Amino acid sequence: CMISQSLWSLFWALLLVGLILYFFTVIILQGLIMSLRSNPEIVAKHEFIDDVTCLYGSVWDSLFTLLGSITGGVDWISATTRLNEVSPMFRPMFAAFIFFTVIGVLNVLTGVFVERASEVNGLDKDLVIQSQLKRNKAFLTEMTKLFKQANVSNTGTLSWHEFRDYLHDEKAEAFFAAQQLDCFNARILFDVLNSWGGDDEISMEEFIVGCQRLKGQARNVELIAVLNETRSINKKLRHVLHDRGSLMSNESSGTTSMQLAEECID
Image 1 (tube, rainbow, N blue to C red):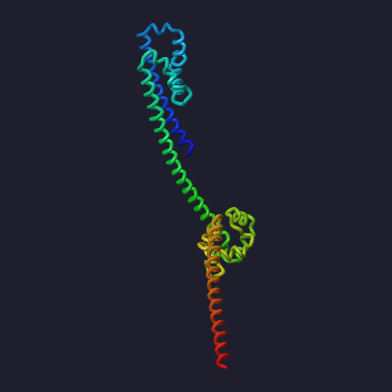
Image 2: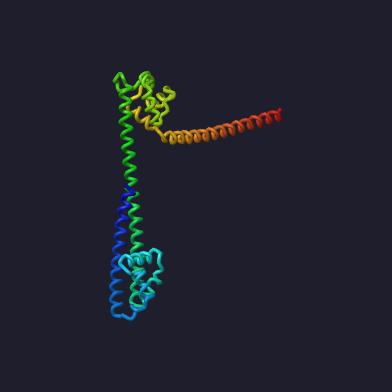
């Protein structure tokens, strides 16, 4: 999508540049022909005719010369040397062409390309979001289908025995592995999925939500959350132990002072 959109913008940009080159080519050739007809003595110079014919001998030659002037292939001042001998008006005309094309048109086209790229990038983000939503919907559909297949009793809740028996199927195990769900230890997986419920059965909602939480990169988030919580608990425990140690030290100091006082009285 992004490539096709860029190619379409490139086509219109090349068409615009081509029309501008053709417009100035016609003006230069028309002015050159009229000037040579009014100055026949210049035509008698063979060296002049060879140079002019090489650069402006035809429409294609003129287009190529103008294209080289705006892309750095031809020095545009050298390209106007012979034209200036015919008429001094060609040099400011050529300068206007360079100024208009290089500073004006090409910069505008660059801005258009950048803006178009930003729009396409935004479209790509929308496509990524839509694609992710489709994957989530497909995952919910597949997990719902899997739950119904495992729930052979049709009670609406999945027991441990039904879950264990279903995981004995190689296709079911392969599907869990494809969803990045580790089912090597079925009992641990069942307990994790059932951690939101108090009984030994899993509802369809608990099953789907649990699989989503354990799926793919979500496990890393859960591990980081558990790690942060463990660090917080350890920090609080150290504070409690420190306060407890300080209290015990104070009690011990108080007891020692009382003993010394009693000995002095005795």
